[in-house]
Image (cartoon, rainbow, N blue to C red; front, side):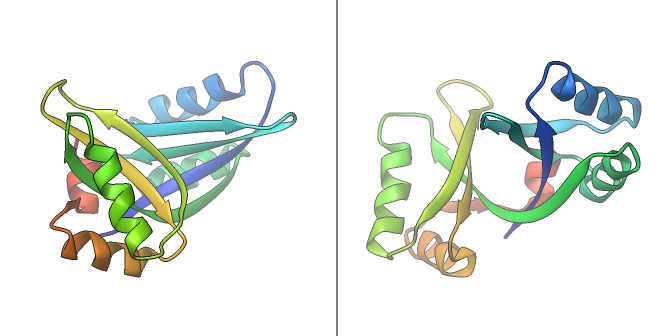
Length: 143
């Protein structure tokens, strides 16, 4: 139950994010979730798209530096404590969260949390034992 994510390294200057989104739009690739983190000179754009391999190759052909990683997507109720429950399970299992981002599809229903863990297989086992719904890659890519 791992989800493929691409990471694009971007110079931290005006227009670079627009270039990535324009390249993906021209290829008909739909962005399902994203996160952008920056430093003084560079940023890391993390994307979950509907067609991972095609997005990766399309961006590489356009000169972008692109990597692919696996993350875990979990569904939680959209109410106070949803994230706290997941993080408590990971703390109990001794698993570190390297980064995360989240989105809500429809307020008041469910939130989708995207995690990168230091031990992804142990995290999946701990989440499963905790009764957490883990989304498949197909489910996330089709959102």
